[in-house]
Every structure is written in structure tokens, then in C-alpha cells.
View 1 (tube, rainbow, N blue to C red):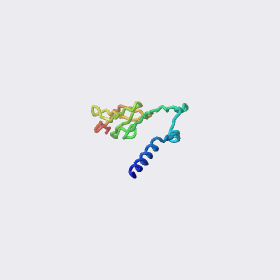
View 2 (view 1 turned 30 degrees about the vertical axis):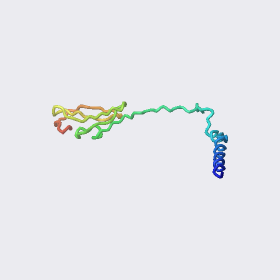
View 3 (view 1 turned 180 degrees about the horizontal axis):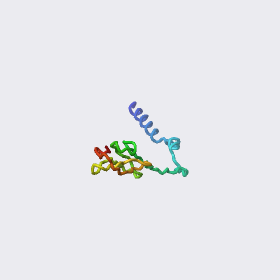
View 4 (view 1 turned 120 degrees about the vertical axis):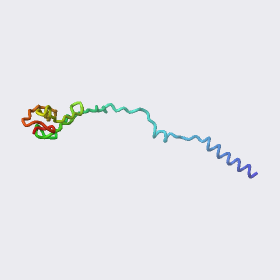
Length: 119
């Protein structure tokens, strides 16, 4: 008899516990989203890419007696490199920078041209 009463009490607890109507309003109310908030003032910033023109001369300008190299980047970010050089043992092609742009001049070397500079 004691077993039957214990079984009835356990069964009563299970039935009452499961049939009890639970309110989850406070839990779901905290996470409930009624409307999606759209912020119209926020505009996407366009990424502006600016390429910088750069020119560097290792012999610091028009210096016929020093072998030099001009290197850098054009406006479209294309890399360049030009080396001073001798042509026909008498002429020097001298590269230099002017307003961040590579330039060249041809010089007649009166004493000859060797190792990419005038003697």
C-alpha cells in the first residue's frame, strides 16, 4: 500500500509539473523584435584610392660624372627604373627626376664615357 501511495504522489507531481502552463513572456519579450530599425542617415563611404607619383635619382640629379639610377612609380602605380648608360664610348644617357617624373638627357662626353658616366 505504501508503494501505491508513493507511486501516486510521484505521478501527481509529474502530471502537475507538466500540465502547469508556463509563461515565457518576460523571456521572449526581452528578445522580441517588432520592427527592423533602418538607419537612413548612414551612408557608405566610397574608398578613394590615391596613387602617389614618386621619382628618386641615386646620383641626385644631372651629374654626368657619377653612375646613377632613376626609379619610382608613375601615376597608375606602374614601377619604373632607368640606369644611366654609355652609348658608343662618347655619349651618356643621363636619367634624372623633374617634378616626380623621370627625364633623360644625352651628353657628349669629351673625354669619353665609361662605366655609365663621363670621364
